[in-house]
Image 1: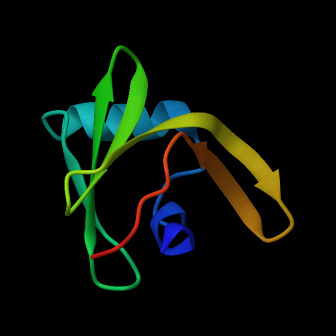
Image 2: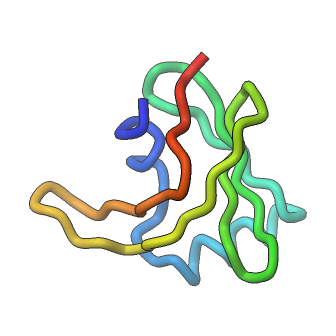
Length: 80
C-alpha cells in the first residue's frame, strides 16, 4: 500500500536524490508488503515506478506528519 511505500523514503529530499544518482539513477526498494518500487530522477524530480510499471512523481516532499514524514505523490500506486 502507499503507506508501506512511503515509509522507505528518506525524509531529506536532496539526500534521496543523491542516493538514487549514486546507484546509477535507479534505486530499488522493497515495500512492507513484499513488493518492489524503483526510484529514478528525471530533471531533478523523483519518479516512483511500481511492479506494474505505474509511475508517480513526488510532488510534495518532506511533509511533517504526526507519526513521521510524508511525501505527496501525483498518482496512486497499487501493489500487485
